[in-house]
Length: 187
Length: 101
Image (cartoon, rainbow over all chains, first blue to last red; front, side, top):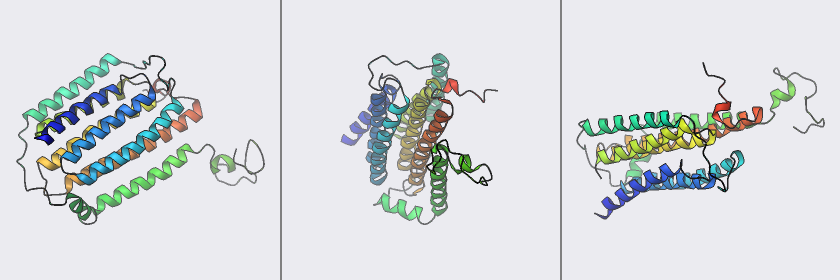
């Protein structure tokens, strides 16, 4: 009974804080509204009995949103929310598309004859997940690892101000690095 | 809550995120919309695991994959924003419309 009430409360709050992301005036508040939405979804995941995944979502999203707040304040105007912030384009078309997607998916959800529940949750879902990732789902885990590694490389390459190709030419054969300020410091 | 209610919640989060991703002019706010869309998928996948096939771990693995996709999207998104901001001083989607056909 309590968990049913909590599931409703978390669900409504997740939707409300998700909508606030695009209504609030300050970037910092927007970031924390998104964090709240993630935390309520993590609460739903915890209520569904997935303790490990819920905790992972909470820990990861707190860190991710704090980093996001730093980027927000770096790139955005009006980080303190002292002025109204309206940076929309094509609001009406987007509202039509988003509303259409919601109506279509809700219709699908309510009309489809979902399969009956097969089996019962294991006593320890975290153990089942670990055994799946290290056993039958090993390929998924390896693909994830490779994707994460490729992300590390790609993000560093993209975010580097001046890499070795900028300094030594496309074939890396320049005798001297083409630095704005000579002296070997990568300016 | 029943499976249908959880899925409607996921669809609602997805649609709010889609609205944000389509309307926001700032690239960073656009990424917030994408994150909200993935958020909806997380709750839908977890509910699917619980209500349809709790004895298999595949639903949990799907949640893991989605969370990893979320982290990758965020990291690559910020790297792209940093690169385009450095190259052209662009932080708005309307200023980065080079590929408009």
